[in-house]
Each structure stands twice: as structure tokens, then as C-alpha cells.
Image 1: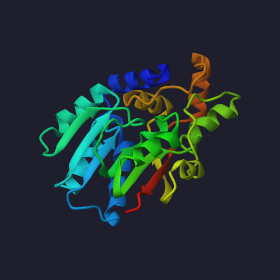
Image 2: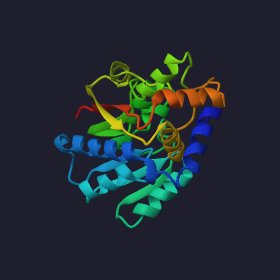
Image 3: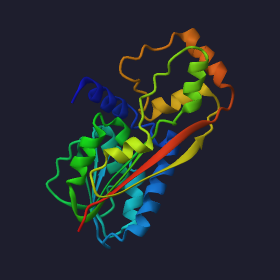
Amino acid sequence: MTRFDTQVAARFDAAAGSYDAHSAAQRHTAQRLVERLVPLGLPPRPRILEIGCGTGHLTERLARHFPGAHILATDIAPAMLAACQARLGNYPHIDFAVMDGRRPASTDFFDLVCGNLVAQWFDDLPGACARLAAQLAPGGTLLLSLPGGETFREWKAAHTDLGLVAGTQPLPTPAACRAALPPGDNRVDSEYWLDRPADGLSFLRGLRAIGADTAAAGHTPLAPAQLRRVLRKLGPQPTLTYELIFLHHRRSV
């Protein structure tokens, strides 16, 4: 792994204990992913590979929706995976493995490969999508969610208005996500979800609590006085937008 990858994994490891209390967006998006599975016509006992399982928001919904499924839940952060296993280890037919979702190590083929709000950390989205799609059985589906470029637009605007640059990670557009998918039966959808923290500082603390506070490469942290100006600009009880993008690829039979 690169230095950046190691940093991201360490942040998520450190956040395993606080993740569940601050991951409303992840819970919402996991539910929206499962809803998208209903019309796919997966087998009654599908083989499922989940990447970036975190503490198990999507894993649990998959196990409930497909009680006969065999699920391989994976994450790059061992502490996150351990939290998922502690939560769901009593479910039958769920296996757990530390794995880099960009480079799946399984030799099996799956009816569904999925990941919830994880692909934004991929340094090469087209390459990762190609490798994940290669894990699909004939007729299998790749389904990923990730935040798009409009995510936290209010936070970024507050910086811009003050002549500053936010340290948020660069995020793709729906068009870029569509271009990242392998040729085939593809669909990309997007929607918006609104977070309403008590204030800007609560927003930042929430990102840290889920391990998602790694700054963009080369970003220089704001001085305390600059940060206070941004927080004042954002105002009390701000609305923070998530642009949620859903990538769907189906392998031909």
C-alpha cells in the first residue's frame, strides 16, 4: 500500500469504536443499495463479495434480505472488520477477511460484488471496477455507492468565500463514474441526502469519528483562526449535502 493508503486504513482502524454512532449517511446509503437489489433477480442463495464492510451496515442488510446467501465481508482496516464480525459473527454463511477492495484476492466468482461508500478511496476507479467486475459469475452484478463531487458543497463554498481551499478529497461526477465502468450493461444513478449537524465543529468531529477525515494529498491544514472563520461562515445548524452516486454493472450471461 502507498503511504496514503496506510494513512486511510489507520484512520478507519482508529475509528472502529465510534463509527456506528456517527454513520447516518452510511446507514442510509446501505439501505438504498439493498433497495436497488430487489429488481436484479439474484439467485435465492447468491454468492456475495462485499468490499469495505466497515462495521456491517450493508452486511447486516444483505444477510437479512438474502438469508440463504454466502457472504464474504471484507475491509482493509482490521479493526473495522473485527467490529463487523463481533456484530454479525452469529449469522450463518458469513465469512470475514482483511482485503484491499481495489485488488480482490478471492479466487471465487460471485453473483454480487458490492461496496457502500468505499470506492471514493480508490486511486484508480476504472482499474478497480475492472478487477471487481472480473470476480463476477456470468450474469452477476457489481453495485457500488460513493459520494460525488457535489458532496459537502456548503463546506467548500464557505472556504471559497473566504479565499481558502477546503481539504476535502476530490470526488468524481456521475459521468466520470459511468466512464469508469467496464463495457457492458451499465447504469449510474445519483441522489442527494442532507446531513444537519448541530454546527460545523460537530460536522468535523463526525468525520473524524468514522475515520473519513483524511485530507486531500498536499493540503495544508488551516490555521486555527482560519478554521474559526470557516465555522462562523458555515453558521449554526448548517445543512451539509451528500451527493450519492450508485454504480451498476452487470456481466453478460
